[in-house]
Length: 406
Image (cartoon, rainbow, N blue to C red):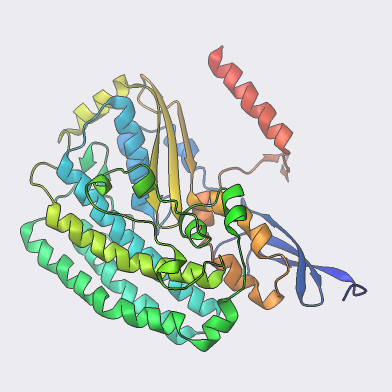
């Protein structure tokens, strides 16, 4: 093997194995991966640029469109930052509505990923089954918010819609459906011999590497890190109920941090989300769901706001982070989004190393990447795309700070 030549294989930015545009470059020796590099930035949409030219109520609407899978996570993170700066008190019932929708979003996101993972392994029957089970969550989300995607329910100061008493039986019906079906999915995914052969000891990320690479969400928990914003820094209604990070040892004897463990974590998080939703329903208080019903007053309050804050939530893929700075103006002076995939994508360099070409698609998919959430910068000068070094980015950052201080 040592005498065999190394050759280069590019995969992407458009490729059947990739669900979103990203360019991978692999150094291959025989069938084994010897080197990995990747280049994101293929789906930059200038959302932050647009947001800094809009008011916070408009930005909340825009946040829903950062990602079609975890839109409520972005809207909630942004709203939490604005609410801290403007000192807006969110009604307690609104916290519960936000949390219930966030957990239904987690269910549908994890089941979507499970279907994609099955497809990447060539198990299309399981792919269709997982997505069929996902439809129950999508139907409930549409029933509660009016939309299957881009729910438009979270607003600065609360939520736009309340849950009525006659809607709770439909929610309970969905929970009972999942209690009956998720066990079958767990068996089909975790007991299947082919899936075990393909996923066990494949794409291993050790606990130490996961920590040093600052991974988040199921990717981190699958490696044994008990990290979860819902427990580390409780927000919305999560401080009122019991939430524990799901680790692979809930099912397996040992934690390996491989693709199989990432399947375990996501499937059992679906089970846990069902319990969390029921707990939230049982404890849901009465009261209003919006701090102020008149948008003009919300906008006036935001316009007077001055300061900076961060909003953190546990999105389905991990910590979603929004930084906002207001300076007594209608639009934010600064708005920065750090999606979960931004934290997880560097783990690709570790988990792909030494694996086989045939495992690339499932390993890449195992961190549940979302490039539309992640891509934030594309530098083009004189119609030529430029690659910026760390020193270049640091210099630009310092220059911007000095301009703002001037």
